[in-house]
Length: 44
Length: 249
Image (tube, rainbow over all chains, first blue to last red; front, side, top):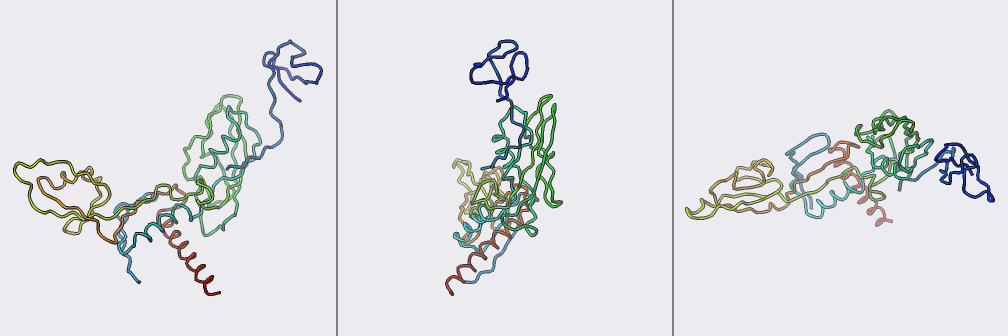
């Protein structure tokens, strides 16, 4: 799962043992990156 | 019952009209109104494929806004369920307007070009491709071509005499269109909806003219008022034919 650290803006890969923490700066607020694929939405 | 319809336009612009029809029953007038709202199909965005949306709004919220943007609909060229591809690509800092949408069909374009979709900051971008589908208002309100459709009885105003010397002249508020004793049609907006401004110091009686209805029709820009009324009448005719065929079988 790809996230971005909200403080140092680096890409962060999370694994299930590492917990929610940036490995570069230790910040605990991570933002989830939007997927690159095309998203289809029904207008209903 | 055969009746000759008599139609007279009181106001007329491309998207907005007020017209009088004589020789209608209330049921038929309401049938026409309902057909204009629910039965005449228009193109509207139905599926959106977001390539990029880094704006502050969710894809679903932008999609709902897109569905409400009116598209011009040449009804002769399309059948129910036909699709037209549209697309938009705007990068901030800018506001994405409906006018930025491009379509794959030359006859189909955005009816109002100045509808804001979303304000984009620097670094934000909105790019999508979407399918506009021809469908009816009864399936979804975004497909309603007639957005403000209604009717009232034509009202005849007769002067019964002068007001008494000591009688109070109270405002006589009325909305719609009146027919004077000379047969002249006057929209109530012309006298500020107050009959005492048109007939000061007179005693008046107002009665509904039987079988005469004043329609007020406004379209969303998908087509002209004339086309909306024509197509509405056509759908009623088509359904009457369907019933006739079903009974004959």
